Image (cartoon, rainbow, N blue to C red; front, top):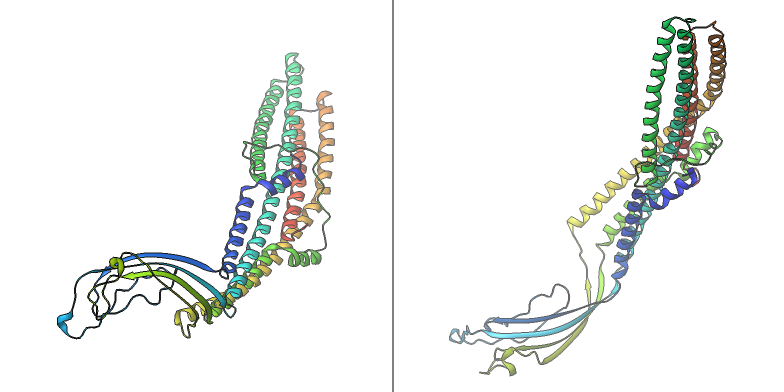
Amino acid sequence: MTLPEAIEFARAHHPRLAVARSEIDARRAQSAVPRARWLPRIGTTVQAIVGSNNSSATDWLGSGGAVELPRISGTAYLQRSSQIDWAPYMNTTVAVGLEQRIFDFGRVAAEQAFDDAQVEVSRYREAQLLLLVELAVREAYYATLAAGSIVTAADGAVTRARVHRDHARAWVGQGLRPQIELDRSEADLSRFEVGRIRALGGLEIARAVFAEAVGIDAPGLDIAGEAPLPPELPPLADAIRQARDRDPALHAAEAALAAQRAETRAREAEMRPELRLVVTALGASGGAPAAGQTTGTYGAGFAPWIPDYFAGVVLSWRIFDAAQRERRNTSLAEESTRMTEIAAVRHEQTAAVQQAWISTDLAQHALPALQHALDAARSNYAQADARFNAGLGTSVELADAEGLRTDAEIQSALGQFEVARTRARLARVIAEGQ
């Protein structure tokens, strides 16, 4: 993949980003809960209860908030203890109830604001993770590029060392050079072959890291196309300002503070009153005889045939709740923690920008020296090779020139990688392109 293709693929398919987007979806789903509190609640209950009918009538069980049942059946009237009746009587009811919130003095709105703030925090964290994924892709891409350049340098060293070994073998066979020349050439060839094997292993590891950074489930991924040039280094003051304006890490910390303040308001709002409309329609029947009668109702309580209904407006208000007040105080304490975190993020952000900017500047200033060293090493090698072929130089001199050239080529590749890596890290901390 080219670098733009790799970044685009990672944005769409990286597993970590998929988790972050799922988190946003979950927060959005949670934010729908407060809005649903304004919709009516409808419930039903069917009950059959057996009990005596002395000091009070058999009551109905609670319906778990599904239906309000304020009253059912009558109460037997006892004139003397001899009238106590332990006989069981059946009581049945079938009811349907509706409850509608009328006014809540801002309770739902406060809870909704808190859930919306949580969605905002998740969005900034997803943006922060996106920058980290892009940085990982860029670093892995440039690492693979550098590893390929090192392999190229190692291949060239092996090829040249093999030619020198063949020349030394021919000269030693003709008696023109001592045996030590051939032995040294063989040792140098073996050394460069080992270096090539290690370079190939480093390239395979870099490809595997690149595949993981992009989010592809494969043993390795190779790069394609020309590596884009790093953007121009902005002034340090501009970089710090961009970081404060764009970095999602700072925005996430600020959003977390806003969410905490919203939670505090939601905890305070829970202490406000609530006005509800309650309507219930039911059919009921009790098997116990009414006062002054000897027989029960029709159906002996098994058939809830007697209709009833009620409607009312309920105002409920928890005037004092110590536990709720402490939850509000806990949220206030958390606000102080969030503000401290913002200050810490800003401090760390400035330090990170300065470090990344200085590292990039140093890496860029080192490139000309590395290129000069490479040119000098290649020139030195050309001279040593010419002297060796003319019979004026030794294998030791040639091996030293070869090692110097190979090391200069590797250092040049690493220098290019360092510039690209440090510039990518600076782009991450200043949220470049966001």
